[in-house]
Image 1 (cartoon, helix red, strand yellow):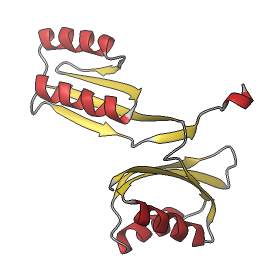
Image 2 (spheres, one colour):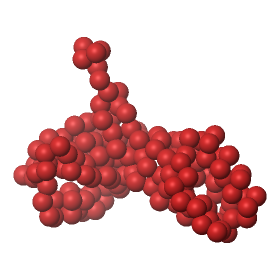
Image 3 (cartoon, helix red, strand yellow):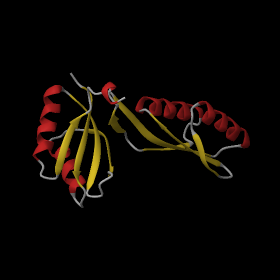
Image 4 (tube, rainbow, N blue to C red):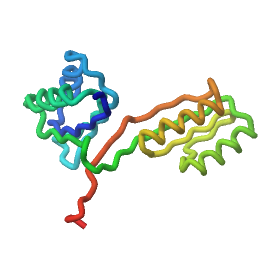
Length: 167
């Protein structure tokens, strides 16, 4: 059964590692749904959060193939873990009237978004929410301001929840 699955990878932080990991997905025709990467508390290590839609067999193959890379320090299957997962979203609404701006400010407040920049005819909003919430926000703004939005989203980052024994 095809479903969304999540992997966290700790990898060596040097040039070419991201290309090598992503080339695995393209070579095997696995479709990356989301990929984010950034340095960790150790400047020699990066952490990737990868989201894919696939079946159980394909997911097991992906994990095994990732574990074969010398540059991969650790593979963590986040799919069945309790996690905190968020995306960064920017929405720029362009060609705004003064009335549009007032509506946008109200929408930003309701949807827990920050107004980060304002121009004569545009407003830039940002927020950090779950993937589903980001999808919904994009739908709402696209419906309200058709052909007048620019969307940039980060892709998800995820971390395992603190379990009960750590509290």
